[in-house]
Image (cartoon, rainbow, N blue to C red):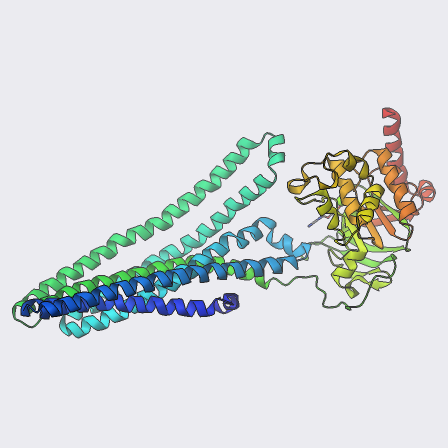
Length: 578
Ligand SMILES: Nc1ncnc2c1ncn2[C@@H]1O[C@H](COP(=O)(O)OP(=O)(O)O)[C@@H](O)[C@H]1O
Ligand SMILES: [Mg+2]
């Protein structure tokens, strides 16, 4: 785990080393202080040598100030290193996630990816910051206090032979018990975050279905679960404290018991005995610290595992097979006996044996019931998913031959569930092509019939859309998404039910504009309304993941029963409403 995360300390390694040195020096100074004190008590005071006492007192002040300065410095360095490590981890995860395909993202779920980017990284950050201090201080304190105690009195130090194993045993028992609890704690935090992320991003749906009470209860349940598990985990931790304190004071009493006669008989000096007390407390404190660190580590290991999972996920769509220079030369699309399923484990094919040949510049309508895999079919063209069998070709070459950049620039797709980003309309449109000129933007909006509503907005193209484009209606949003795709000047344009919220007259106008302005672009239009695709060069009828029939409107009316049924049911609707 450490080996896997080590690279992300890049840029902070010198800082970490220096911080560790500071911490160690601080601990050593702290340990030597009681020794100086003992010198004052045992030699300065009995001899009445004021000079000596003042000199030693001065030394103690200098040592305290130096150790404080080192401590502050170490804490400062640790904080910087922790934050830097966290920032590196976040950036690395985020960059890696950008390379994920839809399938990779579905594997983790968006909510979990967000938790891993924020919550888990925070835990790691804290581990580095605290660990750098405590992990150094505790062993240094332990070892130097032990050595100093032995030099003071070997006989009295034998008490540690009993106490330390006892404390270690206690710590091990605690950690073994608390470790799994901390892992559960992390999972419960996940659950809670999932609810929060899901509900807050869908708050409009929650409100429109008046499901606030239900959601509140769902949150309360997970919140309680999280509370009870943390009560349990931290309860054990606090229970451990009094037990350790008991051992500490017991040891001090034992040392007094055996130490007092030694002082009386002159074998041990009073100052030595008092510094021995300090060392005992310090030894026991450092053992407590170590057990705390162990508990913290057992928590952060859970987080580290989750982060490494993201970092090690292999993006399943890469440019490995691509030829850097390959460009999509025309808009022809060929499916050669393509089969596809979303999950390797699933028995059913989502697309089965698709054989479809589309010439460059054609307008193709795709029709089928919901769930007939229309969206699935077109998502294979820009290689959002990869076919399991058969080949998808664009411009005569398999899609894997192109870099995703080249392929997706050439195949613009307006997804069924599309989004705009917060920012102005112009910023959103430039997403399609950041170098587009004003005239090109205007032309694209005109073709998508978006210009008429944009010109009516008080701020026109500079209107802020709000998060996810909340400030525009569904149909306006769809037209902006189409304009954004048009700005790419694609060879293939795919509209996945992209005019469902646009009125029929505007829909017809958009199609008219496509026909005149994009004669060479292959246009794939998925639509519910038959009128949207009636005049297409080719209509593909889909059902249950298969292509049932292809042909023009006239041909299909003649031979396809499904097509005729859909046509007639929609015509009846028109007559009824008309
Ligand atoms: N991301 C996905 N993961 C798993 N199954 C999916 C996914 N998207 C769609 N499906 C399944 O694939 C089938 C076809 O869906 P889709 O292509 O969206 O249909 P359409 O666009 O024709 O309504 C459906 O049965 C659906 O449940
Ligand atoms: Mg669909």
